[in-house]
Amino acid sequence: MKITLTPAQAVALAKSIAPAISTDPKQRFHLQGIQLRTVEDYATFTATDGYRMHRITVPHIDSTTGTEFVVVGTELVSALLATVKTIGKGDGNILIEYDLDGTVEIIGGGQTTCITELDAEFPSCSSILDPLPETESGAYYDTVYLADIVTAAGHISGKKKAGKGLIDDGQLVKIENIHPKKPMHVTAQSVATGMQFHGVLMPRRAN
Image (tube, rainbow, N blue to C red):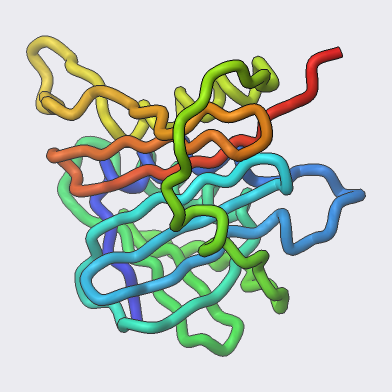
């Protein structure tokens, strides 16, 4: 069973989900993971460090609907970027192959990288990501996290580069909600790659 990514999708995925992966060894280890889930004709990649949550939706090819597992986040990000570098400017896709029995391989450019599947229950995301709350002004946010989430959304929406292949009309990120007591939702999508971004950031109290 596998999920197929183009190099452009792999780079956008890696860069946009990385900020939400916990790298604090003192935190619960399942927060250091990325949840992979396949639903119908797309796959979702979700990460949270307990304060922010990023979900990337990618159209998939040759995958199996209804599967769900968790891998070490930093390993997946590193493997995707390394495989794209190996492929270089040549043709070729990247495969995430899994057997749901502890083996996950990132394949592309003539190389295979094994990453760790976590035996952990990923936090429930549906109650946080699914509702679209009302908009209200006057909320405070961590400056680094706010910059990270907008930058992450930008990796999915794409950027215009004169003379290069990535020309995308969807180069905007949308802030769905600003509320002093509820999560801020940030979304973006790309016509070029078919990918979607949905991030959540909790507000902070002002000192």
